[in-house]
Length: 205
Ligand code: FES
Image (cartoon, rainbow, N blue to C red; front, top):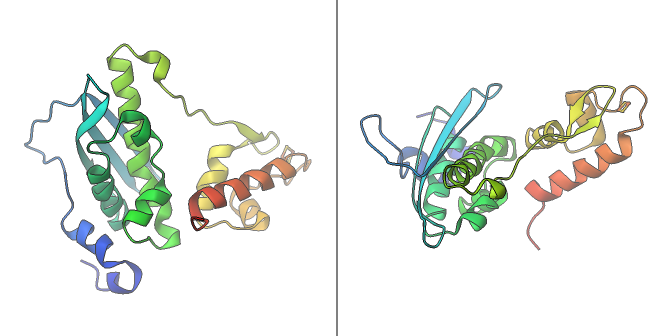
């Protein structure tokens, strides 16, 4: 383990990193009811989350996962896998990276984007469950919307830039080049920038 973990991560993050809970081992058989895989190539991370669900009440009864991710992705998904057991699907679907980071006692800001891998894979697993169980109407599609037509920048890319550290419109532009041609998208881009900062980083009231 890296010697500099101490100044970056809380004890709880380190505990979940060193002793991750509910990891699906290679030789283990897990009859899942829903499975989601997601990855962030830039980050070098890949995440798989599998769930078992009580069909009678729509509550998650078990959650297993695997990742090739970093310490933050491992710790976040470990704690997520504990949080969702006993949770109704709807509630689990809306579990935010902020709630997970809070449960861990906070993550360094620049690592929050790693923690979204687990909940993205969880949402994919829940959608997979709905698809497999004839509930296609409940599947939530997370399609990206283009905000800047000139530079082809989507709302998902703005959110990603915020998770990677952009806090001002200038920093957002540095990362995405949004609004650098006709400028018509700038108001909407600024509004989304504030929304995502609030969603992921504002302290709870
Ligand atoms: S729409 Fe974004 S610069 Fe033109």
